[in-house]
Image (cartoon, rainbow, N blue to C red):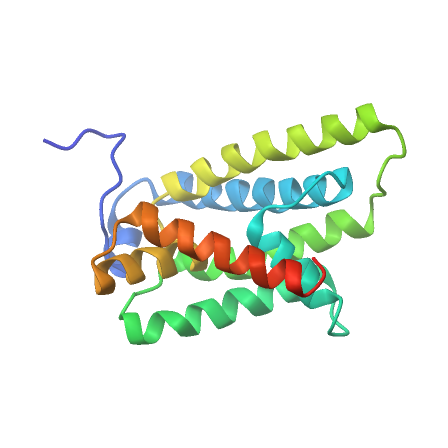
Length: 183
């Protein structure tokens, strides 16, 4: 028996018809904005990056693109990787690809890294906390996986490897590429 707190696999049309759409759209948008802000906070904290952000920063060191543009661009590339995996994006998937990078870019443009280590630690830990809150909100809205999450679930389905193994392999791979690029 499914409880209301469990995530259900819904197609794009089912996602929109699942009820409470206004509340879920607000939850999706708020979650994506919070997630984008959390990325900027962790970058400004300058104490380490999540694997995908190491990749994003690494790419910015080699292309004349801003961080936000790289986040959006990599999201689009990852969505293209969904095609052979036959993953189906939802409204939340597309919103994720566009909003998170845009919000992170705006937050980075209007903020600086603090010099004080205590402030940097607070910014980093606050960013980690908000990352969890934002993720829970946009995933809980059940309007589609984020691009990177869909890549993980598609690879899991196609390869038969556990979600844990696929996610770990993806995170290690993008981190290694990000470090190699200087992120």
